[in-house]
Image (cartoon, one colour):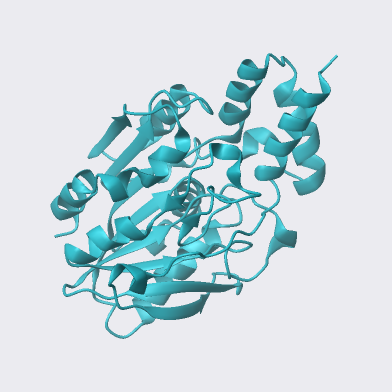
Length: 300
């Protein structure tokens, strides 16, 4: 019999992977001395998406796709009721500032059911199965906007954003013909996340319990919430970055995703300095050299 507290943990994880809990946008680019423009554009299926365009001085553009439960700013994990991941704030603005200062124009936006963007698909979060349409919407916006359409473009896709990017590449590879490169930060499979948590809690039925929660809410089984099979559609130069010993998922998940990427020019870099997944989301803002070196080599 499962312990009631274990049931609560599994139910909470199932909810995170199924239903969006919107979080506030606490910071803006001008607080980091960056001029910006509030922008809005439609997803591939018409859902209204809200974002920022942060101009710089080159013809290079990086489109940023954020993590699950977060938004274009990050995640207010230092504030209640969002402190369950260690009480740590995720702040993408230093990452944008590093890109901006290096000459990259930045387009960052909120996925459907996140931040200030519109609602879609009944509020369901699907680790990319619906959100891929937003990735394509951002690409189409950049291609059609005067001044951006000729820019050399790279993608910075985080967690849900990376999963959604891979799904989009699988379903509509023609939309990515002009994209130079992908930097993927911590893509994830729901099953690996829940298996790891089950091991920590000692619950041998954690995956089954979570699936019984996720499927009635979403119509999607837990094994469908993964980018593994979609990764083989990734043919552009790709860098994956992942916390190696994070306590919430397994390194083998990132390794499997990486192994399935079809690109000949690919690299997997492990973050060794922490065991907390949330620290990985702040890593490129705190250590931008890896990101800037990759984009310089593959966008310039």
